[in-house]
Figure (cartoon, helix red, strand yellow):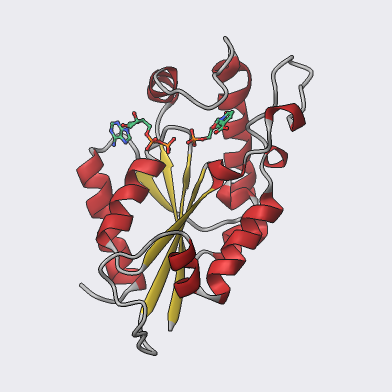
Length: 201
Ligand SMILES: Nc1ncnc2c1ncn2[C@@H]1O[C@H](COP(=O)(O)OP(=O)(O)O)[C@@H](O)[C@H]1O
Ligand SMILES: O=C(O)c1ccc[n+]([C@@H]2O[C@H](COP(=O)([O-])O)[C@@H](O)[C@H]2O)c1
């Protein structure tokens, strides 16, 4: 059994979840782990000197739990799929030795966590400019709503900081223009996955 982990990273509201949903529907034997599912509870999030809860830093996420979840998939992708209620049309019971199992990791701080970044066979990174990001973010409803000023005071500065850190650390990624249409983004990434990972064209 061949295992492949694909990273879908990038800026908040860049289109990561949208792209991930489409890839899951198109790829065989494909599971997903969302980094957002590992946010710590609000009472464990530090308040910074700027007065904002520091959601957009890696310590706001329980990375140990996330890595444990990914490790569970690596150890047994078939069991992982079953225990996460993924039946699909693929014959999990009849595994061929050369069958491929795919895990998508989706999140805004994937590549700033070295062990996770290194687990990805290929890393995609969605970007959108400041104005578009602020606009999309203003229409989003998170479990904890954004207080006024959070985007400019915390979210965007942290995005720039983490992006710079990732580039300084030499993490290799395929940059995706999040301003393209949802169809174009999907086609670009799906074609790349087929060519570079699945070796089918
Ligand atoms: N390519 C796109 N063009 C325009 N809007 C998009 C595109 N991709 C996503 N969106 C919209 O942007 C918002 C955030 O998308 P989402 O996929 O949840 O982003 P993320 O997971 O990166 O935060 C949603 O309203 C979504 O419909
Ligand atoms: O999901 C939550 O519980 C949650 C609570 C507070 C904040 N968030 C925001 O979630 C953002 C990352 O998710 P996303 O989908 O926008 O990439 C990040 O910018 C956080 O500010 C998310």
